[in-house]
Image (cartoon, rainbow, N blue to C red; front, side, top):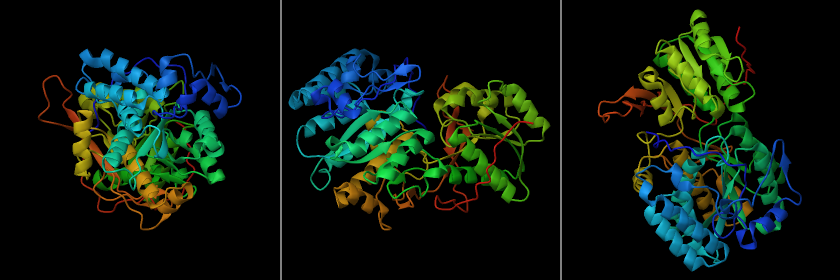
Length: 512
């Protein structure tokens, strides 16, 4: 079951924060001076400039007003003002190297709210100026959905806390340095360049993060070419990252295995043949799912894509497109949606009114918002995901997550947790950049993450089963709540492993 939906706040101007000593790099020297070292000249993008100093949060934290993204159970309304004040005071104390005071402030803040950035800050304050093994973790806070950053940080924070409470990595604590990439390709590239070229970051042993596949690809190109720092994404699913570089790893499923699982479910479980594909032209994630899905149908010799619609087209009309799919004889709709087309995808589900079977994507529709906005018409929709809390999980992770975050978490937190655990295990074998890369590449490398089975990598890809979940009506829902949930389906007889490959047919869909 995915974690409760958090409220959205107004999006701030794009910011990237690296503050050292607390949870981002280099605040002790002042964020302004850090940026001079990161980028010798101001970075200007179309329609906006990167601004690092205009707010307290820009000097002290990545997550602005963190409490507003937390549920009432995790952060009661009555405690939010006090929490934010304590967090701010802790950040300022940390910036001044007053680690004891920072630790006290963060402990008080953590007693009020179960907030992941504060948890990371607290662990970093306890380390202070002492020896540590450092990782950079990047989140898309100033992107289109700030909740994505919170979900990732929960996993990062839980893994760090677990490692340090167990005595650290061979006795040395783990420090996490958080940066906001804004879900921006250019920002991700700039961060990668800084981390692989500036000697002041030589202590960083790896990078974990990024959300969108295109953002991860932009950063991965730098890590691949420079061969100096391991990069691992817990979220991005593009098949292009499979076997991309010995320095690039993925701690989740990929588009190929996810799309294949959906296609096989349609053909074998539902026994249906004809599909309409709703995708977003120009978005790698969406196009790959659509391509791979169509390749499986074509390869089956009896399945086919009979209609397609580009949800990114300004003229796209959900109701009309659903009617066109029906006229073409479609029995199933595949929604290969991205973050930017979520509202259109939800509109398609509502316009369909439960008439055609629906296959969702691998991530973006897997939220309580989908269930709340669509209601019973989404019943039966099936998705392929990396992890579900009611599936084959590591019970210790689930128990600790429920306790720490005051409620269930989703696959984003689970895979982010696993990625940091994998990096920490690799650091434990050899605490150097080359050593981390070598450890992760070993055939016998294994570490327990959020799933029941240990994590292992082949050609950089996590080897894991795809979990199918189905939107199902639940009998024990409370009055007024959406009586639906994502329920795991039994594993298919033949699982699709990430190391398997299907040909890229190069499909590019156009509505007739």
